[in-house]
Figure 1 (cartoon, one colour):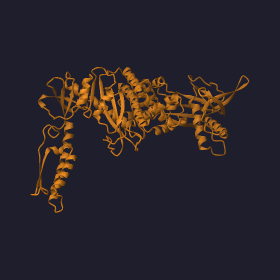
Figure 2: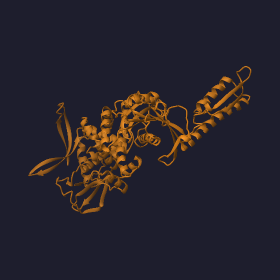
Figure 3: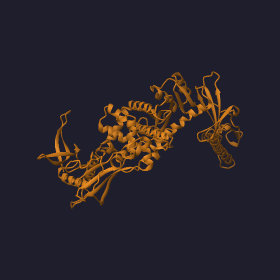
Figure 4: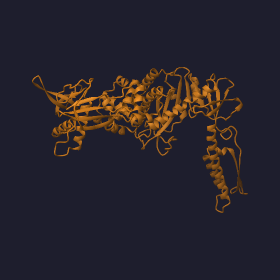
Length: 610
């Protein structure tokens, strides 16, 4: 075994360069021929005097021998030797002798070998469960085929798959994904790609390519989903969430301070908007500035979706402005939204009683508008009533305690008594009261000058139609006037599925935080997470049909225990038998494989005799 350097010309540019190959010699018909074992590439990093040591160490690793040289092997050569030895075993299509290149056994027949059990070595364990099922899900979506159709070359296709499946298996930054691909994952074996030779910048370039083809990819995936699951395209869910940056993100015009749903007001934010169908698959995603007003994003997201005439759009109150509802009606959409503002009301005599999916009671009152164009659904939940009553009590108590402190200060010689200052303090109390102050009539008594306060009194007068008088009541509105109360309410609860999507994106698939400083790269990070979610949703939708309802974190833990590993034995004849295969799927994982109709031995078995 030795390394051969060959001069090669680039046919497109005429550039001349050297490429390196690991070869062995073989006598065929009286002639000695060189057989290429591995292509080491153009940028082979070792100088010529290191080649013999590298080749010798590769032979030792394949042969299962101890290091036979006196001096320690340099770390760089040891890492390279282990990598190339692993590639030789992983890339062997059948049971092959490295010395003769001959097939020494029929891989379909039983293969009995006499080996020294004590010589067993287990090397190069790599995770394979999530990787194999991630590839299965993406193949179901026609993802790899679409990348090829778009003219994306093999190296970048591999980098894109590494980004997406890495986000499924080990959610983190692109740099952390690169480390995972190199040191922990068998994904490269499954797609016949050497991630250890790939620089980390390829993952960032892959992100740029994904963003370039974002709309085409999203349209293609959703079309595949419709065919795969026979979806009825009648319901559209829309909502937004935001995520924060680690760093200043000075090169990102969308990075803005705003209301953080993760309570990270100390960081710049970026907002992700999703349009989903009723089954939870993403039809379109888009990133907005971190301080964007929710109500201003709807038109830009829904335009061009080619949704069928009369599709039902479900939104929460943050987006359901009168302008947005009017736009939906104008463009032929139906709507089902939470009412913004308006007085709360509820008439128990006109309500019906149903049970939620969790078994809790819910009372619903339906009213049709005078013109017959809109229905309002007033819903009363006991659980929500307890929550809102406790919240009102807490803020009311805080407001009253603040007023009591002002009164106590009036009795102290050095306490604040200036009328203007106390008005400011009361104003700040009202701001902190979350609306509780509207139920109080507060009066300040002053001296003859009107500048000093001599007393303060308050009286609680609940305002009708608010959370105080009608706790636990909320209102839905829709132009679907022909539906009954229960159908309207149960359709609206689909929006809770959208909330679970955001939880999955953020907690299970690494949406937050964002480490990139430029707009394109941060958008790419979010889009990779969305693509990973689509693949996860394919798996979960199929598994639900087999009565497997685990969340992705639990499924990932089940899949993550399976490894590919190389077992090396010394044979009686002095040669070494190397067998690389996946560990046996444990019962829970086997159940998943069977439900999906996927082979439980990803990567197959590779044998190499040296």
